Length: 297
Image (tube, rainbow, N blue to C red; front, top):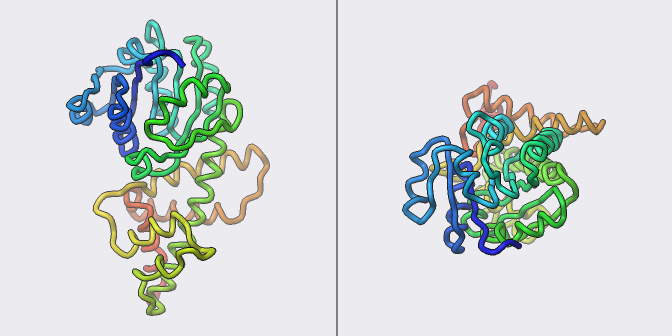
């Protein structure tokens, strides 16, 4: 690993902010960029250096980390008019924590290598905002083994596990498998919650009652209490999960994989977005089932 690498972070959102905070707390030299410059204030106060464009950020860092909303945002930040690819010199490593389709990731990685000679590592994360703040994210990475090994000490600031899953795109494929499990579990929890509530069960007591049993999970213990008492702020939104299910559908088609359950969950989330729930916390999708269960529905 290079001595005292300079770190750049693009995308100071729900995940990016606690991840960058962890990097600063670990003593890293961090430069940050965000489309909304106002979000950089607290990080600058904590020691980060703010830059006006991704290109300007790229020219003063060795490793750049991305945590952006979708493929369009990643492509713009990297290859847009003021993108990282125009940095002179460019960062040695680009680590993308966003969740994209594997095909798009491989395409972007080829373009990055051709434009800069640098290495693109797809490194999506799982663990949510709580995991980011606690430094306990799980990272599934795709790319050259030596490159992943080189950046792992940096990623350890906010991740308890970094696993190389294979070549470029393998990290994204693993994340989509992760999201398939999360989405189907979410749908099951939502239906179970409505069933329990309409049957007179004390819903608040259920996570404790099931703890240690086969139905127990991080999702049960995390999402169910949010169904009982809606959170003030969303930690994971319906819209973002639907974006991931769209990517899963694309991968399923490309790999000739027959899916029976996930298409139903995707339709559930599409319905939620149509009902204006796109920016709601994931836990609140149970409200669709609750409404449909009302007498006369």
